[in-house]
Length: 395
Image (cartoon, rainbow, N blue to C red; front, side, top):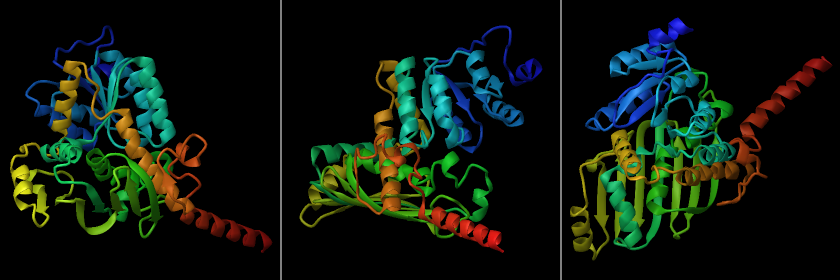
């Protein structure tokens, strides 16, 4: 083990010291870690990835070489012992986020977690407890919140520039072939937490809530239409918001023409955002209501521009927060609102009932698992298997 640690860059006789404005440790060096590393490079030297860990020693060495990362390990504990860190970025599979976050937070080190931050509301509460115990902060990657237009629209909703929000559309229409689910942790409740409602649509739903504010109730359906999964591959929901607006939400992995689409219909304007995995200023469109052309156009033309939904925008906001002693965006409270909506979509779909905000407390099966009482198709499969076994026994 000592030889392996040294080969990966760890100094075993003392803690390795790296001088950097903000020292980042990366956990998991797969595809999303590369995206994040590219985002850090855009920060003009304000931060540096100084350490990385991955269970695959070859992969972490490749990551070190590509991104000039001095320290590499094959375990989180080795990483935390090897170097002083300001923040640890979790780029690991979803089923690992909770325990890794708890471990890091108890060391008094900030955590930035990829989505979903936890597999359940119960896990998010465990992270909150570790945050209180360690004194550090937990934040969730929500890069779509930080584009210029998104931040501006949130403020315009607050000041009523476009009148009352009336209705919204929030669609994540993506396509994933059967081969996508050959990765062992995909398409399973216990390691991914859910299907597109949890792992894909979470981005658009989080952006919608960050602009329109809290939700109040939801009715939903979910289905397993085509993919070889035990989770859903499709969900539809109707969500009522506290401000009176009503939103329709579709999350799909079955859609050959892929798009991520948000639409906000206000009294005086329609604002649309269409992209796939990230947006720029040109991804936005505004349509004034009759009689409001001048005021809407003036407001739109005065809006700030230049920042899209890249990860570097959220990193910059995190750096600003650390430097000025503020809460890291996006907080556990922010993450809870989105995760609770996801749990409510599953709860409504699987129980056939309307779910209200705050209803899924620790007495609900959907508090501990997004599967809750169980997906109907899983129950049907279990019934068929049980009947087949019984028939075989009789025979």
